Length: 330
Image 1 (tube, one colour):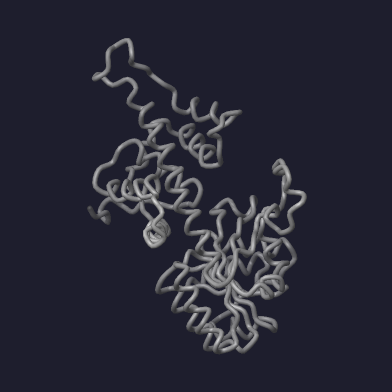
Image 2 (cartoon, helix red, strand yellow; image 1 turned 180 degrees about the horizontal axis):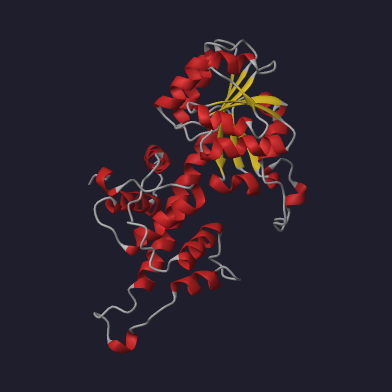
C-alpha cells in the first residue's frame, strides 16, 4: 500500500523504515528538510511541501501522523483536512487525548474524511521488535488498512500462547487490536502509559532500597553491599517480576551501576495525568498510578536514586533525553 508519514522523529522515521521493509510505499514530510532527505535516501518518497505530500498519496489518501500531542497534532490535522477529499483517511498515531479524538473524528466526518486514533507503543526499539497498536475509529476502515497494521506489529513471535487463546478470534496475538469507536485506541494507550508509570516506579523504589542497604543508620550486621546490576540480571531469569522494563534497567545498571549520568529529573508526557482524570471521572481508586505520577512531579525538585532509575529506563526504551540543568524548573 501507499501511505504518507507526517513526522520523522524517533518513532516516525523507524515506522517508515519498517513499512518500507514490508513492501509499502511511504511518502514522507517533516519540518526538518534533513530528516526528509535522510529517509528518502533509504527509499521513501520525499515531498517538498504539504501540498506535494498530499498530491503524491494514492487514492484514497492515507496519512499517518507521528507528531507531538496537542497543538502540533491539531495544526497538522487541520492542515491536512483542508487538502484531503471525502474517503481519505487520517491516522493519529501519537499520544493524543482521547476526548480530542472524539471531537476530531466528528469534525472530519462532516467532510467525509475518516479518522483513526492509534495508540502506538514500541519506542526506539520498534523498528526491530515491532509496534504494539491499540486502534480506535470506524471498524470497516480499520479492516481496510489491516496490511499496514500487520506490517508494523510484532507478530506472534516466540511468545508462548495463552491457554484458550486458540479459540478466540482477532489480532491481539499479532500485536494490534481494534478497541472500539473514535477515542478508544488512545484511551487504552493512555491507561497503558499510566500503568507504565506505576511499574517503573515500583522497580525504581525497589532498587533505591538496595542502594541504601548499606546505610550507616542501620545496625552494622544488617548492612549489605549489594550488586544492583547482578540483582537486575538475575531477576530477568525465571523471576515473576521479569519484564522488558527490567531488561532495560539491567542494561542501564550494567553500563553504570551508579547511574551517575542521570540526574533523576523525570518528565511526564500527559497520559499519566489523563489516566488519573479518567479514574476520577469513573470513581476508580488508583493509588499506585497517582503516587507514581506525583513522584515524577517531585523528581523535578529533589533527586533520589529511584528517580535516576526512572530516567535511565525512559532513555533506554524511548530515547528520552533529560533537559540541560539550566532549563530545569522546580
